[in-house]
Length: 410
Image (cartoon, rainbow, N blue to C red; front, top):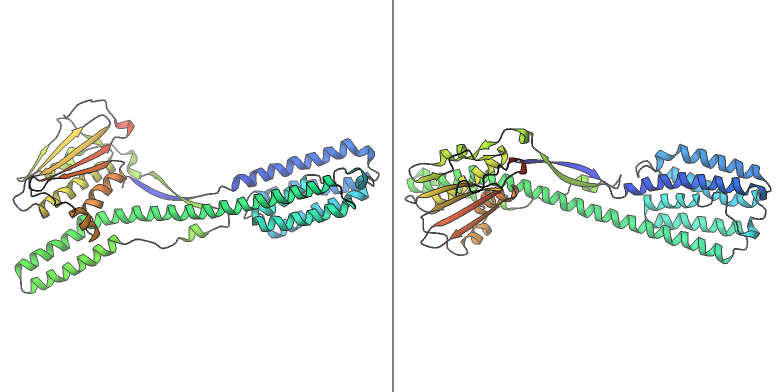
């Protein structure tokens, strides 16, 4: 394989936790500055100083608690909200005029940080619970709430519930994306295994079936069993892998599993001359025409392209008849390598490929087109009944391997 896959974890809600961390620090400073510049009108400043000291120590000491969902425990949320509610209710004790002049509470907008933590951690229901308690505390603190107080309370409640809802939607989207990525990765791996099986086990079983039937006797029974196993194996290969992964169900960090492709260990190996891999395919019935200079490709790409050529030749041997001839043409272009496999067999009847794929025979779909698709290339098949079949395999070059040989090989 040209690449191997690795599963990593990512989360779209992690930036929300980082934003909440900064918000708590900034609003803590803001609450302290409000007290500093308004201390002249506060009748009992020692109450404000005591609460603000506790709030500052708590905020700075618990910054790791708001670094992610796993660290933000229910106990922390309960204590955090209790401190915010206490600060609201202590405001009239520190400032006796707070209820009449409709001024800020001791924690001020720092309280919203506690509500937002509930929203990010538990969604809109937790946010509604926390913001309702804050609203009740504000109404009690004001005594006779003004229109501005009611407006602010309603704004905090709606905003926190909306943020909680958005977080829940984001988590659901992450789970869906994780599942889709896992299915995609499993499908690619299944196709890769199917190609290898088709190139080896299935062809051996098919050969045993044909030879056994031709020999007769006990060999015919062996051929029949081989045919049954071939059908069973083709059915298994054509089926899907649909087991859910525990990784996609892990929501402790609000994480989504993402499958990323990384270079294989052979990615730094020297390029391989494609001609050397195709040369063993030439023989009495197979002619090979290639450029006079090496056709260099990364080792995984060269092997996969050679395997696709081998699959095309195997199809010629199986379906075009024992007397069919085949020709391999290698063309080396600056941006791609093209290998054409042509035979003089009877051709493929229209609709036969779709029928074979439905029967679980994946030679063209997986061993040829699947390999080229994984390399970023394409396979084109042209067949005219009575005039043979032509398969054109195109593989793009890695930019670093392009060598500026325009027209070489044509």
